[in-house]
Length: 132
Image 1 (cartoon, one colour):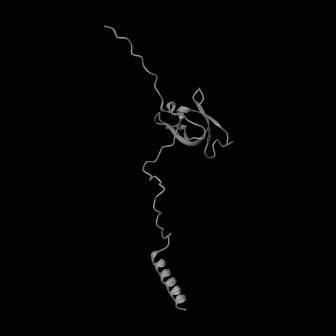
Image 2 (cartoon, rainbow, N blue to C red):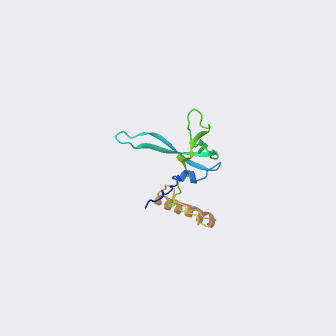
């Protein structure tokens, strides 16, 4: 009994399934170097804005946020879509809502005894003015 070979699907990259549009804020993978005792690569993710949508060859044109490249920071750079991702969403941060209660004011670095003394002086002055 021989079985027919099962066709395999090409591996799908998560970056290829995501569509990037002009104006999207993204992170671009930038290899910096290798760690000496191992084969691990040191990589940083730089912020960028998409200038043109992905072509058929799988590349985007982006402008980096910040002073990179150093010779012309506003130059468009062509990067592979496999090296681009959307910024991670911080789920731990509270979501802003329109009906949130305003935060209470803080003492702004002033000492509490000083504030109490100033309050007494201001009340004494206002009481003196009201008595006139």
